[in-house]
Each structure stands twice: as structure tokens, then as C-alpha cells.
Image (tube, rainbow over all chains, first blue to last red; front, top):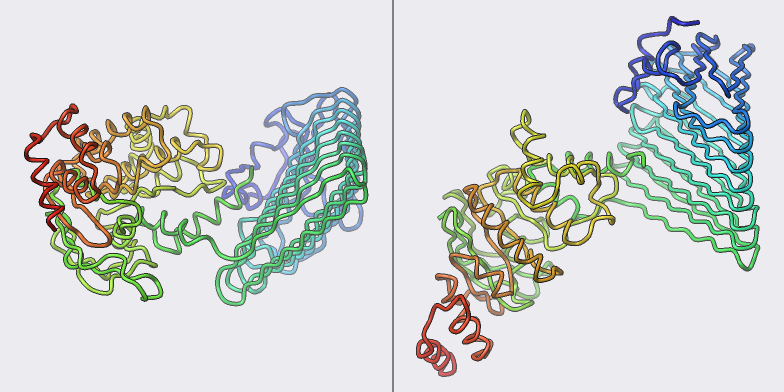
Length: 320
Length: 265
């Protein structure tokens, strides 16, 4: 499929993130691609070293993405899960396998610009082999009506000496109801970096994210960074969980949340546990508003308090 | 006068003590005017109050900018009139890029990129090295201060308040900063320089001595510095710096007279 027909509303929907999905369509760029238009596969392109397979099921797809042993690819594998309808159910069951000694970035874009009663569910399994460098970045846009219910679940196994980076970004548009659960199992000498960014903007927005890292291998290391803002009645609850279950493993959880406007709620619950006496796990959490000094500094450049706050929110939620 | 402070009294936040007591002075346009005094004398409080920070409200007195009473204006309104402040210890904010930060106060949006580059060059930061960085902990103290100055310069304000720009910097860097102040003045901006160091103040045309919350003297800077030394009893230091040093301004008899007058008081 060299020129798939893909809804224009979805193609342009991530512009505020400075992402143009057109750059990732089949026929553009060199990376492997899988495009889903609601429950139909509308584009699929493979590259050497990457097996991409998808099968349509009643409400979505089952997909296999396999990075063959030793494959190192610069161009990201692109997954686009778009729905250009108000209502419906989209279910994704991906299985991602990165065989040993691979280096790859997977960029997933989930765009539901018209969502108003739409349900998107994902149940993903990731297997990252030994000596891999794997980055998974997921950017979401759920329209402006707080009309989506989005519930992804991910189980991720990270093999020995591998680096796994997870980036989740939901900072543009209105999220609606979001429930995310991620469990990452880190083996010997592996490194886990997980960055979560979310912004609830009104009463109808409720975001609950549980990001867990289980340090199961000796010298495994992890850092979870969760940053969120809630305004005008929005609600964000973040659980950052790290367990140190192996010798000399080291984990850290960091939650920062900003509350703006009446009725907004931010809750952060870092949960850490160490069962090996040589392991080290720490956490820090901060909730509230931006320091007055930061606002003063920006206002001394001519910004109003609202403008200064917006700049600070954007900075805080910036992807790293 | 671009700035006039009249009988300004600033209490602590709980209103229990007075930090600045009936202070008055004026700042000439396109000059460097130093506010000098020992630590704890109220210099920074004065700077924040002139900028209009919400936690620094005068209980009496007036502040005029270009003849307009700005005493009750907000920090944003004052900035829009052409006042800005470069902080002693500017904040470090993850995710806020240097070009974005510098661009915040730029009014000429069509030339934002050029103005950012120019501002970085004025403060001796290579634009190529700093355009992709953020104002976070990865910047050294000196770099962060330069970025702060660049952001102030890019605004093209009429008055820049520099709060202790020398704090935490070594002497080689300070020399560089003094040159930067000269460049700022060359851009037709007025500098209100808050400092407790005479070597920083020596770039100033005029000065005001703040001593325990009172303004004791506003005059040409060397005279103000001499008064400061006399108040602090630093005669030898004063002779070395002001008489025998390269900034020699007064003969020894004059210095002796000023110190005698201070002792008589």
C-alpha cells in the first residue's frame, strides 16, 4: 500500500506536538509502518530486519512487531492508531519483540480528534532481548471534547544489559478518561527510563496512571519521571512504583504535579519497596503551584500570570 | 529622571518591621546608577519593590517611572512600560529552552531570532552552543546569569535592574560582566545596579548609599563610595581603592575630612 487514504483530521492532529503524521506514512521516510484507521489496517510497510504483521479482529487488530536479532535501525518504526469517529471501540493487541542486540525506536501516535464516546483499549506485551537499546514513545491526542476513554495496559520484559526508554505524552487537547497501567520487569544490568506527561484541563478529564518498575536483575537501574498538571476541575492521579528485588539494583521515582484553578485535583503516590539489602530505591514527589519566584521572573518580562503559568506548564510537560 | 523614588517605606510582609525607611533618590536616563550598601541594608528589597513583586508592597511613598506613578502597578504592567529585573539567583526551569526564555519579553516578534542571537552575543555566549539548551541545572552559575542578562537585553527595556550581578562569580568573570554593562548602556538603556562591591560599582555614573534602610547620599558614584567607606570605618581600604588605586578620585586630605565628619556624627 504505497498511498493509503488516511483521514486528514488525523494527519494534522498532532501538529501542536510538532509532529506531522504525513512524514510517517507509507511511501514517506524509511521506517517500518503500521497504520490503523479505526479497526481497519490502512497502511503497512516493512523494512529489512523488521517483521510487521497485523490481523483485523472484530473491534481492532492483533499485531506482531518483531525486530530481528542484530538489527539496528535509525528510522523509527511508526504505529498510528487513529479514529476519525465520535463513537466506537478500538482494541489493539500488539506483541512487540526486540531480539538480542537490536537498536530501535518505536513511535506510536494515537489520535482521536472527534472522540465523544470513543473507547480505545490496548493490551500490549513487549519482550526486549539482551543487549538492546529500545525506545517506545507514545503521543496521544483525544480531541477537544473530553470524549475518549483510553485504557492501555503494557507488560514489558527488559533483558540483560538492555536499555529501555518509555515516553508517554498526553499534553495537548482534552484527555477525557484515561487509565494507564505499565509493568516493566528489568533484568540484570538493564536500564529503564520512563517519562510520563499528562495534562487534565477540565472537569471531565480524569487521568490515572500506574507506572511500575520491578528491578529483578542484579545492577538493574531505573528512573520513573511523572509530570502532570490539572486545571479547571481536571483530576490526575499518578502511581509511580519501583521494587528493588535484586542485589545492587537502584531505582528512583519522581512525581511532580501542578494544580491550577478550583476543583482541580492532583494526587501522586510514589510506592517503593526494597527486599534486597544491597538495593537502593528512592522517591520524591511535589504537588501544588509553581514557585512565586518563577512567576515573578517571567512576569518581569511582560507576561501576565496566566501566560507565565502556561509557559511553565509547557516547560514542565516538555518531553525530555 | 527616568526613575524617581520618593519617601519610600517598605515593611516586612507581616508589617512588623520597616526594611526601607523613607528612601528617596532619582535615576538619570541612560546612566548606570548603583545602589550600594552592606548586606542586609535593604537593597534587594528596594529592587523588588521597584519591579513590583507581589510580596514587596510599600506602606508609604511613591515610585515614578518616566513621570508616571507606578506605585500601584503590577509587575506585568511595569514590565510593559519598560522596566525589567535580572535576578541575583535566577531560577532553573527544566524544559524551558534558552531561546524560548529569551524570547518571552521580545516585542518585535518578526525579528525574534535575530534579537535572541544578538542578546547572546552581547553577553558573550556563542548562540550555536546555547540555542538548544534549557535553563536547567546543567548551566553553571555564570552561564545562567548571562542568559538572564540576555533575556533582559532582548526585551530592550528602558530600565534594567541588576540585582547583585556579581554574586558567586570569580574576578575574571566580573571583569567580563563590567564590559557587558558598558554594552547595555550603549544600547540606550538605563541600569539600576544593586551591589555591595565597590569594584562593581565603579562602572556606575551615580550611586545611592543605603544604610540600615535609610538612603544617606545620592551623588556621583565615587563620592557615594567614599561615604560608604567612611560609614563602615574602612579608611585604609578607601585610600587604597580610591586614592592610590587606578580609580583615584580624591586627595588624601579630602578623604580624611570625610572620615572626620563621619566620626563627629
